[in-house]
Image 1 (cartoon, one colour):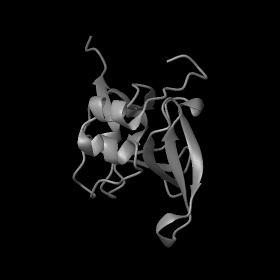
Image 2 (image 1 turned 180 degrees about the horizontal axis):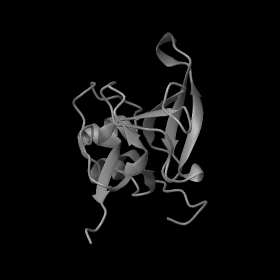
Image 3 (image 1 turned 180 degrees about the vertical axis):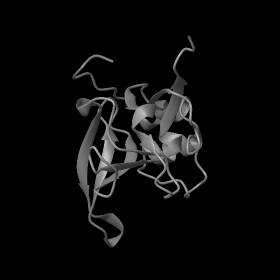
Image 4 (image 1 turned 135 degrees about the horizontal axis):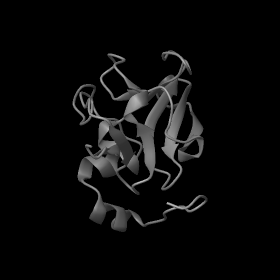
Length: 136
Protein backbone atom coordinates (compact mmCIF):
# COMPACT_ATOMS: atom_id res chain seq x y z
CA UNK A 1 0.00 0.00 0.00
CA UNK A 2 1.34 3.44 -0.86
CA UNK A 3 2.32 5.73 1.98
CA UNK A 4 -0.38 8.17 3.07
CA UNK A 5 -3.05 6.05 1.37
CA UNK A 6 -5.96 5.28 3.66
CA UNK A 7 -8.64 2.72 2.89
CA UNK A 8 -12.14 4.08 3.53
CA UNK A 9 -15.21 1.82 3.41
CA UNK A 10 -18.72 1.95 4.80
CA UNK A 11 -19.66 -0.49 7.55
CA UNK A 12 -21.76 -2.31 4.98
CA UNK A 13 -18.74 -2.75 2.71
CA UNK A 14 -16.50 -3.83 5.61
CA UNK A 15 -19.10 -6.46 6.59
CA UNK A 16 -18.92 -7.88 3.05
CA UNK A 17 -15.15 -8.47 3.19
CA UNK A 18 -14.54 -9.28 6.88
CA UNK A 19 -15.64 -12.28 8.91
CA UNK A 20 -17.96 -11.30 11.81
CA UNK A 21 -15.18 -11.59 14.43
CA UNK A 22 -12.79 -9.57 12.27
CA UNK A 23 -15.43 -6.85 11.85
CA UNK A 24 -16.12 -6.76 15.60
CA UNK A 25 -12.43 -6.36 16.40
CA UNK A 26 -11.19 -4.15 13.55
CA UNK A 27 -14.21 -1.88 13.08
CA UNK A 28 -15.82 -1.91 16.56
CA UNK A 29 -12.63 -2.02 18.67
CA UNK A 30 -13.48 -5.43 20.08
CA UNK A 31 -11.14 -7.91 21.75
CA UNK A 32 -11.01 -11.66 21.35
CA UNK A 33 -10.88 -13.80 24.47
CA UNK A 34 -7.28 -14.63 25.45
CA UNK A 35 -5.96 -17.81 23.89
CA UNK A 36 -8.77 -18.08 21.32
CA UNK A 37 -7.45 -16.15 18.31
CA UNK A 38 -5.39 -17.39 15.41
CA UNK A 39 -1.60 -16.92 15.17
CA UNK A 40 -0.90 -17.23 18.90
CA UNK A 41 1.23 -20.34 18.30
CA UNK A 42 2.37 -19.53 14.76
CA UNK A 43 6.14 -20.09 14.62
CA UNK A 44 6.93 -19.91 10.90
CA UNK A 45 8.86 -17.01 9.40
CA UNK A 46 6.70 -14.49 7.63
CA UNK A 47 4.69 -11.29 7.75
CA UNK A 48 1.56 -10.50 9.73
CA UNK A 49 -0.69 -8.18 7.72
CA UNK A 50 -3.87 -6.30 8.54
CA UNK A 51 -6.93 -8.48 7.91
CA UNK A 52 -8.77 -5.38 6.73
CA UNK A 53 -6.47 -3.82 4.17
CA UNK A 54 -3.46 -6.13 3.83
CA UNK A 55 -0.96 -3.59 5.19
CA UNK A 56 2.22 -5.37 6.46
CA UNK A 57 2.21 -4.77 10.22
CA UNK A 58 4.61 -7.15 11.99
CA UNK A 59 7.41 -9.57 11.10
CA UNK A 60 7.87 -12.97 12.71
CA UNK A 61 11.36 -11.97 13.90
CA UNK A 62 9.74 -9.54 16.37
CA UNK A 63 7.14 -12.01 17.70
CA UNK A 64 7.66 -13.40 21.19
CA UNK A 65 5.75 -15.47 23.73
CA UNK A 66 4.37 -13.04 26.30
CA UNK A 67 2.04 -15.60 27.94
CA UNK A 68 -0.80 -13.07 27.75
CA UNK A 69 -3.10 -14.95 25.36
CA UNK A 70 -2.57 -12.77 22.29
CA UNK A 71 0.16 -12.66 19.63
CA UNK A 72 2.82 -10.25 20.87
CA UNK A 73 5.53 -8.34 19.01
CA UNK A 74 8.25 -5.97 20.20
CA UNK A 75 8.14 -3.72 17.10
CA UNK A 76 6.00 -3.09 14.02
CA UNK A 77 7.33 -3.95 10.55
CA UNK A 78 7.62 -0.22 9.85
CA UNK A 79 7.08 2.71 12.18
CA UNK A 80 4.45 4.19 9.87
CA UNK A 81 2.45 0.91 9.67
CA UNK A 82 0.61 1.52 12.95
CA UNK A 83 -0.78 4.53 14.79
CA UNK A 84 -1.05 5.04 18.53
CA UNK A 85 -4.11 6.52 20.23
CA UNK A 86 -4.86 7.19 23.89
CA UNK A 87 -7.45 4.72 25.22
CA UNK A 88 -9.14 5.47 28.54
CA UNK A 89 -11.90 2.86 28.21
CA UNK A 90 -12.71 0.21 30.83
CA UNK A 91 -11.37 2.46 33.62
CA UNK A 92 -7.80 1.98 32.33
CA UNK A 93 -5.22 4.21 30.67
CA UNK A 94 -3.70 2.38 27.70
CA UNK A 95 -2.24 3.04 24.27
CA UNK A 96 -4.39 1.63 21.49
CA UNK A 97 -2.76 0.46 18.25
CA UNK A 98 -4.60 1.00 14.96
CA UNK A 99 -3.64 0.09 11.39
CA UNK A 100 -2.38 3.16 9.53
CA UNK A 101 -3.80 1.73 6.30
CA UNK A 102 -7.46 1.38 7.28
CA UNK A 103 -7.75 2.66 10.87
CA UNK A 104 -8.67 -0.82 12.08
CA UNK A 105 -8.29 -1.57 15.79
CA UNK A 106 -5.44 -4.03 16.34
CA UNK A 107 -4.83 -4.09 20.09
CA UNK A 108 -2.66 -2.21 22.59
CA UNK A 109 1.01 -1.57 23.28
CA UNK A 110 2.55 -1.86 26.74
CA UNK A 111 5.99 -1.01 28.14
CA UNK A 112 6.74 -4.48 29.51
CA UNK A 113 8.25 -6.15 26.45
CA UNK A 114 11.70 -7.58 25.77
CA UNK A 115 14.78 -5.82 24.37
CA UNK A 116 15.57 -4.13 22.14
CA UNK A 117 12.43 -1.93 22.44
CA UNK A 118 10.97 -2.89 25.81
CA UNK A 119 7.53 -2.79 24.13
CA UNK A 120 4.82 -5.44 23.87
CA UNK A 121 2.39 -4.94 21.00
CA UNK A 122 -0.47 -7.15 22.18
CA UNK A 123 -2.48 -7.77 19.00
CA UNK A 124 -5.80 -9.51 18.36
CA UNK A 125 -5.12 -12.54 16.16
CA UNK A 126 -8.34 -11.99 14.19
CA UNK A 127 -7.02 -8.56 13.15
CA UNK A 128 -4.12 -10.26 11.36
CA UNK A 129 -3.52 -12.44 8.32
CA UNK A 130 -0.25 -14.38 8.25
CA UNK A 131 1.78 -14.75 5.05
CA UNK A 132 4.66 -17.20 5.43
CA UNK A 133 7.94 -16.43 3.71
CA UNK A 134 8.61 -18.44 0.56
CA UNK A 135 10.76 -21.42 1.36
CA UNK A 136 14.11 -21.58 -0.40
